[in-house]
Image 1 (cartoon, rainbow, N blue to C red):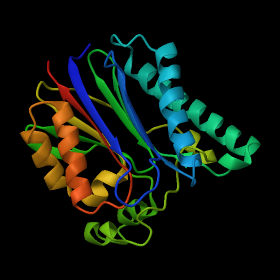
Image 2 (cartoon, rainbow, N blue to C red; image 1 turned 90 degrees about the vertical axis):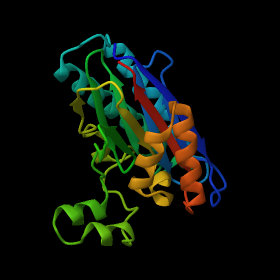
Image 3 (tube, rainbow, N blue to C red; image 1 turned 45 degrees about the vertical axis):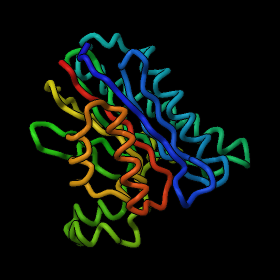
Image 4 (tube, rainbow, N blue to C red; image 1 turned 135 degrees about the vertical axis):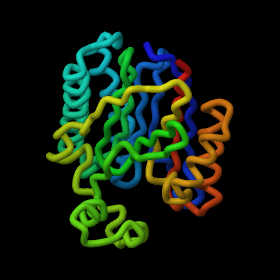
Length: 247
């Protein structure tokens, strides 16, 4: 098992009445998830809580977390996401209170020698390694699709009217298409950050990188990033989960 430490903070923020985000850091440090629910009232909270409950449930059934074949890990993650997606859709169909609820999810799995990252929606996984800070997941948003097509620039995407419009998330048919997982070879000193879009709504990537680098432990890092996003005027719930690789 790759030796890691983690810290997590999730707050309602200054502009919302309830926190629709959820996060889980496995006590055994095998998996980490951040989910950002949507649907209004309690529906978003329900969707995100189902994601962080059901995905780990399926992962622990399918994996040994001690060097499973990479294909087996990515398949297990995709199946776990597919299962959570189907359960969220089913509840939305039988209970009017949860009609059209959905959630994003960002995932990091520690499978012994490798880490696996993936996501659905616009919750993200970042990595700070050797001074380089990069986003490892791709947003399933209309602005990202426009950027990929070369229609708009990165600068235009930041304040685009479709910035928060997702074409893929859990709770829809396309949500069951997996998490676009990729294996990452961890290096001692690496710092990973999983976050809801409330973080990036109030804090630029350069600032996040700076705070990650300066922190002495992951909980301190998570707290400082969330505070910076809140101070920066984030208008959403703010959730940040930080993982430090020790060896």
